[in-house]
Amino acid sequence: MAIIYLVIGFLVLMVPIILTFLNILNLFKKKKIKENVIDILIFLLGIPLTVLLYIMCDFKDYPETLRLGGMELGLHSPIASWSLPTVFSILGLGIISYILLRVKKLKLPPLIIVVAMAGIFICSIYMIIWIIQLSKNIIEEFIWGIPYLVLFPLNYILCCIRAEIEIMKKYKQQNLERKEYKNKFLNECSKILYNIDNWPIIAIVFAIPLVVILICILVLFGQRPDEAIKAFLETSDWTLSTKISPPPITYDAHYLCTVSLRGHRNLVKPIRMGIRHGEKIVVNRQLCIANAFEDLIKEKMPRFHHFIRYIYDKYGYPLSKHINTSIEADITYILMKPLEWIFLIVLYTFDVKPENRIATQYIGNNIIK
Image (spheres, rainbow, N blue to C red):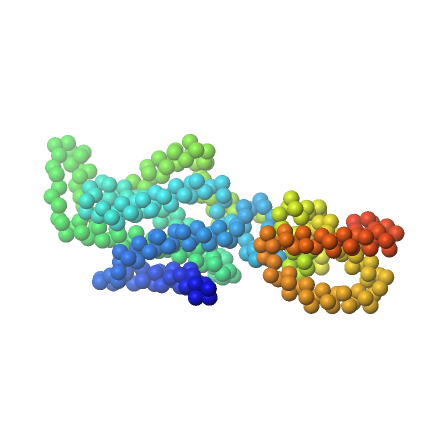
């Protein structure tokens, strides 16, 4: 089993870096290093690994409140989720254009090559914007995983540059004869199109109507005309973000009852916000009862409270560090139920106003009236 984990770890962490390094070398070397194999691996591994990593990050849109205290990154999504149809359409256009150029090569007529280059140009610009969006957090904080989100976009751009250079060189070597037209306008267009040095400029010009067509199609499916830009602007925590998110909520990872609050809301039933050590946290009735019980023991039996706190800090805190998923938090909440009932029985037996004590937990200063 350990060997399997090592192999998976190597594939996920090292292979993308190795492929990126070889891809950069191939851009400058005359004799390419397994060019076709590397390009195929970049797309076959790069796309699913990038998507998987993005999903694992569990990003939330900017209006949502982040819940801190566990394995969360503490960052909102770098792309607005409602803009994903536009994002995927641009990526699809770019990938199809690249495959067309890379596979068909000289079998394509010049006009189709230029249109494919236009599609690549649009997608490459989008990839650059994506890299800029992530750059702030990569440079300033270098959060694990975020740098890997830029590897496939970077490799896509490098692959496209190589593919375009290669096809332009091969067309020049063929020295194709240009067809003469009687129509003067068509003849001039043919003259410009058959001049391979003009292809990059023509591709940029062709990108404009291609973008317009793409926008018109996406608008029919409910996307806004400027969705491609707002995808990055309607975010927070990133380079191009223009929105301000609500302050994060702390889910203290030190205590079992608090950790259980990271479970599913319909089970753990959070009831309100509270204050612990000057930070806002979410509380539910189970947490309030547990803290009220501790407060009562501390008030009535301070020495016994000191012993309970010592035992709990020694064994409960290490256990709580292993609770990192919603399912594990749900199980913790359920397992704590019998203790919650015991705490409640003690409170109703020895406290004159048990509900007052429960209600005043985590309100800043616990004043029992």
